[in-house]
Amino acid sequence: MDTILKRPLAEAEIAALRCWPRYGSAEVDTSVLVPLFDELLDEWPWWDRAWRVTRAGFAHPVDMTRVDVDPDPVEVAVPGAVGREDGAEMPLSARIRIHGDRVIRFGAKVGDLAIAPGREPAGEPERHPFGMVLTALMTSHGIRPRDLARRCGLAESTINAAMRGRRPHRLLIKLLAPHVGMTVEDLTALAD
Image (tube, rainbow, N blue to C red):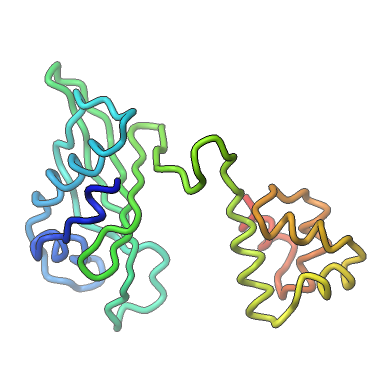
Protein backbone atom coordinates (compact mmCIF):
# COMPACT_ATOMS: atom_id res chain seq x y z
CA MET A 1 0.00 0.00 0.00
CA ASP A 2 2.96 2.36 0.33
CA THR A 3 3.00 3.31 -3.35
CA ILE A 4 -0.70 4.12 -3.59
CA LEU A 5 -0.65 6.21 -0.42
CA LYS A 6 1.90 8.51 -2.06
CA ARG A 7 -0.19 9.03 -5.20
CA PRO A 8 -2.96 11.62 -5.03
CA LEU A 9 -6.37 10.50 -6.22
CA ALA A 10 -7.57 11.96 -9.50
CA GLU A 11 -10.57 14.31 -9.39
CA ALA A 12 -12.72 11.71 -11.17
CA GLU A 13 -11.78 9.07 -8.56
CA ILE A 14 -12.66 11.43 -5.69
CA ALA A 15 -15.95 12.33 -7.40
CA ALA A 16 -16.83 8.63 -7.80
CA LEU A 17 -16.01 7.87 -4.14
CA ARG A 18 -18.08 10.86 -2.99
CA CYS A 19 -21.01 10.15 -5.32
CA TRP A 20 -23.83 8.87 -3.11
CA PRO A 21 -27.07 8.69 -5.17
CA ARG A 22 -28.87 7.20 -2.17
CA TYR A 23 -28.34 10.58 -0.43
CA GLY A 24 -29.25 12.73 -3.42
CA SER A 25 -25.88 13.06 -5.18
CA ALA A 26 -25.88 13.31 -8.94
CA GLU A 27 -24.62 10.10 -10.51
CA VAL A 28 -21.08 9.99 -11.93
CA ASP A 29 -19.08 7.41 -13.88
CA THR A 30 -17.86 4.83 -11.36
CA SER A 31 -15.80 2.92 -13.95
CA VAL A 32 -12.82 5.08 -12.90
CA LEU A 33 -12.77 3.04 -9.68
CA VAL A 34 -11.99 -0.21 -11.54
CA PRO A 35 -8.31 0.62 -12.28
CA LEU A 36 -7.94 2.26 -8.84
CA PHE A 37 -9.14 -0.89 -7.06
CA ASP A 38 -6.93 -3.06 -9.29
CA GLU A 39 -3.96 -0.88 -8.33
CA LEU A 40 -4.83 -1.09 -4.62
CA LEU A 41 -5.27 -4.87 -4.72
CA ASP A 42 -2.02 -5.28 -6.66
CA GLU A 43 -0.16 -3.60 -3.78
CA TRP A 44 -0.82 -6.68 -1.65
CA PRO A 45 1.88 -9.29 -2.26
CA TRP A 46 -0.57 -12.16 -1.63
CA TRP A 47 -3.18 -10.93 -4.13
CA ASP A 48 -3.66 -13.28 -7.11
CA ARG A 49 -3.24 -10.90 -10.06
CA ALA A 50 -5.21 -13.26 -12.30
CA TRP A 51 -8.26 -11.72 -10.63
CA ARG A 52 -9.07 -8.24 -11.95
CA VAL A 53 -11.80 -5.84 -10.91
CA THR A 54 -14.51 -5.98 -13.56
CA ARG A 55 -16.99 -3.46 -12.22
CA ALA A 56 -17.55 -0.96 -9.42
CA GLY A 57 -20.88 0.45 -8.29
CA PHE A 58 -21.87 3.55 -6.39
CA ALA A 59 -20.21 4.23 -3.06
CA HIS A 60 -22.15 4.14 0.20
CA PRO A 61 -20.78 6.09 3.16
CA VAL A 62 -19.99 3.98 6.21
CA ASP A 63 -21.33 5.21 9.56
CA MET A 64 -22.75 8.38 8.03
CA THR A 65 -24.56 10.34 10.70
CA ARG A 66 -25.14 13.57 8.76
CA VAL A 67 -25.71 13.97 5.05
CA ASP A 68 -25.75 17.77 5.06
CA VAL A 69 -21.96 18.02 5.48
CA ASP A 70 -19.12 16.74 3.33
CA PRO A 71 -17.09 14.60 5.75
CA ASP A 72 -13.32 14.47 5.52
CA PRO A 73 -11.94 11.93 6.07
CA VAL A 74 -14.68 9.64 4.82
CA GLU A 75 -14.96 5.87 4.56
CA VAL A 76 -17.13 4.31 1.88
CA ALA A 77 -18.15 0.83 0.80
CA VAL A 78 -18.26 0.14 -2.93
CA PRO A 79 -19.91 -2.96 -4.39
CA GLY A 80 -18.43 -4.54 -7.48
CA ALA A 81 -16.99 -7.73 -8.90
CA VAL A 82 -13.67 -9.37 -9.74
CA GLY A 83 -13.15 -11.87 -12.53
CA ARG A 84 -10.57 -14.01 -14.30
CA GLU A 85 -9.96 -14.68 -17.98
CA ASP A 86 -11.58 -18.13 -17.63
CA GLY A 87 -14.91 -16.41 -16.90
CA ALA A 88 -14.96 -17.01 -13.13
CA GLU A 89 -16.42 -14.08 -11.22
CA MET A 90 -16.89 -13.24 -7.55
CA PRO A 91 -18.58 -10.36 -5.78
CA LEU A 92 -16.35 -7.60 -4.44
CA SER A 93 -17.09 -5.23 -1.60
CA ALA A 94 -14.34 -2.64 -1.35
CA ARG A 95 -13.99 -0.44 1.70
CA ILE A 96 -11.87 2.64 1.25
CA ARG A 97 -11.09 5.55 3.55
CA ILE A 98 -9.94 8.79 1.98
CA HIS A 99 -8.73 12.06 3.45
CA GLY A 100 -8.60 14.94 1.01
CA ASP A 101 -7.08 13.43 -2.12
CA ARG A 102 -5.33 10.49 -0.41
CA VAL A 103 -6.24 6.86 0.33
CA ILE A 104 -5.56 6.20 4.00
CA ARG A 105 -7.05 2.70 4.30
CA PHE A 106 -8.28 0.03 1.91
CA GLY A 107 -9.84 -3.35 2.52
CA ALA A 108 -11.95 -5.68 0.45
CA LYS A 109 -14.24 -8.65 0.74
CA VAL A 110 -13.97 -10.97 -2.24
CA GLY A 111 -16.57 -13.70 -2.21
CA ASP A 112 -16.68 -14.73 1.46
CA LEU A 113 -13.08 -13.73 2.20
CA ALA A 114 -12.36 -10.39 3.87
CA ILE A 115 -8.86 -9.11 3.19
CA ALA A 116 -7.10 -6.04 4.45
CA PRO A 117 -3.63 -4.99 5.38
CA GLY A 118 -2.72 -5.65 8.98
CA ARG A 119 -2.60 -2.81 11.46
CA GLU A 120 0.24 -4.32 13.47
CA PRO A 121 3.83 -4.99 12.37
CA ALA A 122 4.62 -8.40 10.91
CA GLY A 123 4.86 -11.05 13.60
CA GLU A 124 2.66 -9.12 16.06
CA PRO A 125 -0.91 -10.30 16.74
CA GLU A 126 -3.71 -8.05 15.55
CA ARG A 127 -5.38 -6.12 18.34
CA HIS A 128 -9.09 -6.58 18.95
CA PRO A 129 -10.96 -3.39 17.96
CA PHE A 130 -12.72 -3.34 21.35
CA GLY A 131 -9.68 -1.51 22.75
CA MET A 132 -10.36 1.52 20.56
CA VAL A 133 -14.06 1.47 21.47
CA LEU A 134 -13.35 1.21 25.19
CA THR A 135 -10.75 3.98 25.04
CA ALA A 136 -13.17 6.29 23.19
CA LEU A 137 -15.98 5.58 25.68
CA MET A 138 -13.69 6.23 28.63
CA THR A 139 -12.45 9.48 27.07
CA SER A 140 -15.98 10.68 26.34
CA HIS A 141 -16.95 10.06 29.99
CA GLY A 142 -13.72 11.45 31.41
CA ILE A 143 -12.79 8.15 33.08
CA ARG A 144 -9.17 7.13 33.69
CA PRO A 145 -8.16 3.44 33.65
CA ARG A 146 -7.44 3.48 37.39
CA ASP A 147 -10.89 4.91 38.16
CA LEU A 148 -12.69 2.44 35.91
CA ALA A 149 -10.78 -0.46 37.47
CA ARG A 150 -11.76 0.70 40.95
CA ARG A 151 -15.45 1.10 39.99
CA CYS A 152 -15.53 -2.38 38.45
CA GLY A 153 -13.51 -4.09 41.17
CA LEU A 154 -10.79 -5.07 38.71
CA ALA A 155 -7.06 -4.67 38.46
CA GLU A 156 -5.92 -1.65 36.47
CA SER A 157 -3.83 -4.03 34.33
CA THR A 158 -7.08 -5.71 33.19
CA ILE A 159 -8.46 -2.37 31.97
CA ASN A 160 -5.14 -1.49 30.29
CA ALA A 161 -5.06 -4.88 28.54
CA ALA A 162 -8.59 -4.34 27.22
CA MET A 163 -7.63 -0.84 26.03
CA ARG A 164 -4.58 -2.27 24.20
CA GLY A 165 -6.81 -4.67 22.29
CA ARG A 166 -7.06 -7.90 24.27
CA ARG A 167 -10.31 -9.67 23.32
CA PRO A 168 -12.79 -8.93 26.13
CA HIS A 169 -14.47 -11.69 28.11
CA ARG A 170 -18.28 -11.47 28.48
CA LEU A 171 -17.91 -10.93 32.24
CA LEU A 172 -15.60 -7.97 31.65
CA ILE A 173 -18.13 -6.43 29.26
CA LYS A 174 -20.87 -6.91 31.86
CA LEU A 175 -18.76 -5.16 34.51
CA LEU A 176 -17.69 -2.28 32.23
CA ALA A 177 -21.00 -1.44 30.53
CA PRO A 178 -22.76 0.58 33.25
CA HIS A 179 -19.62 2.63 33.92
CA VAL A 180 -19.13 3.72 30.31
CA GLY A 181 -22.78 4.61 29.65
CA MET A 182 -23.71 1.52 27.64
CA THR A 183 -26.08 -1.39 28.05
CA VAL A 184 -24.48 -4.82 28.28
CA GLU A 185 -26.18 -5.76 24.99
CA ASP A 186 -24.84 -2.70 23.13
CA LEU A 187 -21.31 -3.06 24.48
CA THR A 188 -21.39 -6.78 23.61
CA ALA A 189 -22.44 -5.91 20.05
CA LEU A 190 -19.54 -3.44 19.78
CA ALA A 191 -17.13 -6.06 21.13
CA ASP A 192 -18.28 -8.62 18.57
